[in-house]
Image (cartoon, rainbow, N blue to C red):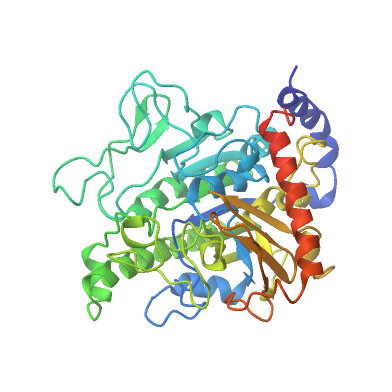
Length: 467
């Protein structure tokens, strides 16, 4: 019997005891929302001069703003895996977009919550494996190819409305470059089952049209729910519909499309919150929001500057999508949970998408799935409650030859073609403009050792020791 089966048996036995406490009896609903390629400054509350994001701004005003929130990687698939496992994706082979898949041996947050009485749903972009072996779909789905087949319904989700990868942000089934032709990426609701209705117009609205009925059904059944809502916005192909282009008619075409699709997504976040309130579950719902990485460069590819419709901005931060400088991994981060945290607050401590799983399990008085398995996230509850200000362990990054490690103040960084590490004081120099490696060799040495220990731990994971 493998670790996964043993853990499920353990949790089932533990469940009655864990939920006997008064706190656990009032289990919160949980929603993880994520934008795709949204830059740190691509919101009104982070100071964008033109973007209209009134609902994100209201969430920031009423809830918790994470000033140093990080995606686990500077591209999408690895970050998404970290949200569901609490582990860095280097441990299980999702090193990049369209690389690897969620292994069966990994225990996801959806599986844990499902075993503890939650109904679970995934809506939007999956990008953690292919969704069909019967036909050509998206980037990797091919007839007869099961090598990376790992759909959400085999990873703990009861209800799905999911794509393998990107789609246009308006009329998602139609190729905007070849009008009238199919884009080639489909929304799947289960094995060999595609959605064919209500697929025109704003993609964020199309996604929310499926998430809200799921939430209503859970509330009607008096059952706690876990909803993962992963928008495609503002990943390319960036397309805004007429009403949103009209809002930005003072902008050039590229900016109007980029800003318009973000405002359309923001509108759906407002719709979601209104629905939660009308259902009477808004106060006891943990609503998280972040981006999967920094803003993309031209055509979504690697690069240092915006181009075409990829007009995202990182504000003061260096780098973009694909980079382990701050601009590639420091992203907007929000939590709204009125019942637990009724007052607005800002968190300056470094937090990361890998923290979702341990934080949520801590909230529910549940243990980590496999005690001897390495987890890279930490519970944020002590920080959110004001019981501590510092992060108990640093955040490590490994992507395409780039390496980085961030603690509560300092960060080391090494480029893919470099031999030497740079050192930055992120509290004094968040733009990473002054390399302090020669000024503080002792700090550099200690952080390099910590990073090397982490890399060795990841190597052990890749050799299969976690399973």
